[in-house]
Image (cartoon, rainbow over all chains, first blue to last red; front, side, top):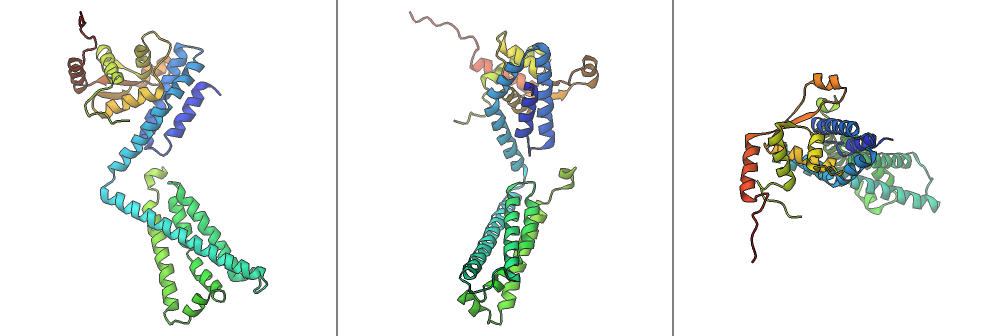
Length: 213
Length: 109
């Protein structure tokens, strides 16, 4: 690979996720510089790489400043809402996964002791929905896919229903609570609140038409 | 690293302004060659273009892509041409007064 290609690959990397116009200007300007450098000095590979490597700290500082500048353009209220929604979604997703893992471990322990039949239909639902919630959490990590992660998490909210159903015979607390007349309403409210939270976040984070273009 | 005061120009920015005032318009690689002043080590890409972007945003320089025609005629990518603004020229003049590039010799005798 030529030195100029290495520099342009590096530019693609550190401009990723920035405003496309800003990133485009940097890349085109670098392409011009690299062409001029090669035309001026035919065997400039080493010098070009040296310029690129010495500039890495400045490249990263520029990227940091650009991201901060763009964030600063958002209204304060929008930044606060976005931060609060991210925190709530992460907390709810983590709680959902912990709940699924607890349900799976209880079921597994009882199945290993031979007290219940392994892989009942409910247990399979719990395993599947917990795995789906983990996928949703992983999708939240990247800015571009976090709206999809929120949609996946909304679908995996049914874990609350199946998990509780699975734990009826395995947890004395849940076994006692299920006889309450408000039980069904409470479970429906929890699931409804989770779906509402995740879908609201998905709408907030959904890519705009401009970003998709 | 301490944050520098607003309005204080770095040596690289001063050098860019001086080059820009002398050259009317300039582009990145020509500037890097001029700053190297005959030495083989050119200013790093990141350092150079970060400074140019900061100065443009600060109103000290203007930047525009050159027309397609000369670039196509020479078979090269278009250059991004910079010019020093009135504000840039003023900042350069103020910095020269504050810190003369050639310090007067002081006799210690």
